[in-house]
Length: 344
Image (cartoon, rainbow, N blue to C red; front, side):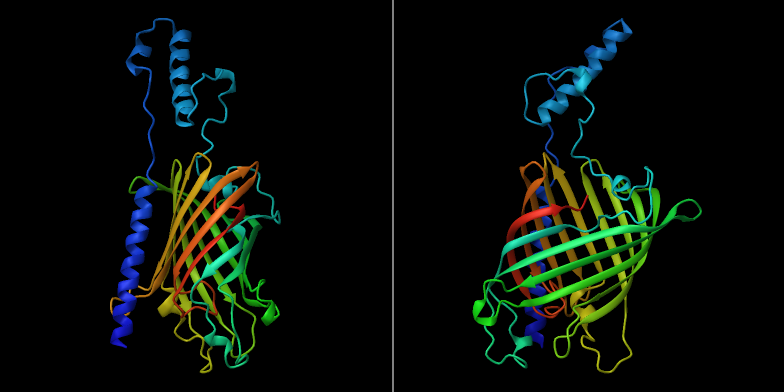
């Protein structure tokens, strides 16, 4: 047990170091300004002075995109496509009709999701000769809709969301290409628009809700848990931070399938998101904050433009809880595919 704890702590420190290095790489890259800002106030004519400021702003935007030819001022309407906006995503500042389906968590498909340690142990009681492929298909579909607009003081909205993530042994014809595990995650929450300043970031949204997660399997593969959670959405320009602490609601059933699930999934999830020139970078951290037996996970994501709305997607996961069936299994996985809808 001591050996396992020391190994777990070492693995977690390594994951934390990787997460911090990734966060450092997500800092903005500032372009040099070719106009001197002090020249504009010296122009006497107010119209010419205004055009000076506009030209300076346009040139900064164009240089940030790696372009050199000037753009007409009349076309300067969508100069900040990299801005992240929680209020736009949650439709706080537009007409918000209930029961309109919208993206929630990312939706993607990874045709090549590789791990060097597939979890065969859980299958042995029902399939003694099981041999899982190291490469499988992983995909996630997620959507939400508003149930009730402004039921609380013209602010809080009631939302319903649903996320499904599946692990498909598509290439394992010897084992009849089964779905190894599928997780279903319905959730219900109140969402409030806020404007709190937190360490230079603005908290735009506060959610309070309930989430159920299960894999719909029979014994011995059955897994499920229920939580109540808070979700804070903070942003600044093209950087966003989502902090979601939760409280696990334990089952009274002595035959609970996963009585120690919070030891591995942890008590919170922290995700940083950075958008730059059409690319989207994300780093996720979960942890149980237990110094004696520290467990959790990190996930690193990169979505990049391919053609039109089509985005390539690379995902790296390391730790516990990639799926409910693997909640207490330490997994390292690298997946490559396409993203259909991103975080923001």
